[in-house]
Length: 245
Length: 223
Image 1: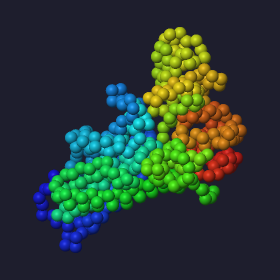
Image 2 (image 1 turned 60 degrees about the vertical axis):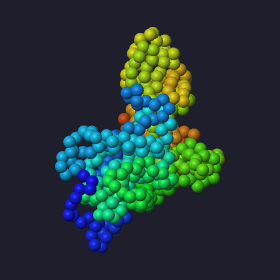
Image 3 (image 1 turned 90 degrees about the vertical axis):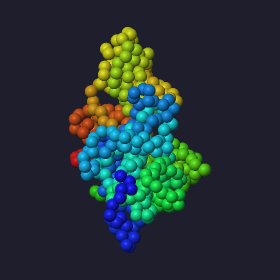
Image 4 (image 1 turned 120 degrees about the horizontal axis):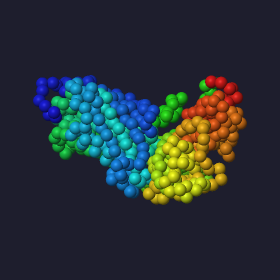
């Protein structure tokens, strides 16, 4: 859908976007952990119009046996969009897109978890998109990272997902649905904020080298902001009388 | 009674720990600096800085007493779920009875609960448990609850003070497995009270002055 032609003006004369944001402004984000009692860890995130739930099970013995790795755990993320998550009913079940996203999310998470501590096991991460509004994979990664931390799984760092892109010739942060559909490019990233390492980088559309660098820079800055929110969410879950498990 | 509860310092995975000491459990180092690998609380003990996770699964250690549930039978062994990432086999040579080949079901059947000891763990994560020791046995009757294994030390208390207090106040028999499984036997009222107290310990495990608050709770008698 990227690069679809339309008459919609995505950036107005004052340089504001259609939802009134500045180019480097994030959508409002709300996070919560411990929303699924049966899971070992869970998180819920509202990121603009996105509503995403993540639940972590394990580490537990991996079955079928041939998927086991004798020296480490495998992380099986499953990204799934609910049938009602988009305007037009989405045919339920895995499709090309969600299989791809499950794979890249698994790999991004594997890079932070100390997988070698749990040989022969699997850590299952379920990411359910209840309502989609562009940038679900990055919001999903953020939620998954919170859920992993909440499940007590050892990690090098928290992961922060954040997207940047280009609409109407301007590099902007955190695209929304309209910008994603009618814009020129979308760059979802997963970042390890402590070291600034990149765990996931994809690009849909065309950007020049300068634009890409600029977009990545923007996402990096935003990631630090989201990182603070993640820390606050995890710590506050144990502060007040908030109950967990 | 909403008095101010002091809370231990909570860290998140990847958070830098600025404390003197050698890196202990739950801590990793990068470029000479210490970072937490868990969502947990920091403590400093005999020169080591540790992070105690607030949640997570049980990692078997040799010598731990655990409470497990039989989930499968085989001719020469039982398969026991000890709440770890891996099931543990209990071999017929590791029980105090003489078991004929294929006759395992006569002694322990699926769903039975045993108090066992971890006899060995290897680097592949395989676990072996045994019943051949004083005090280890099949647990009959009673009630079972589960807590996070990282909170077991708080339920036991210093030198068993917390658990002893629970026993004294309720006349219940209580076994706490290192894997976070707790077996309670006694009067129904007693059991309910113990469960409530343990849930309270679990909820407030990261606060100070917990023993006093639990004592107060037990003495108050209701709610």
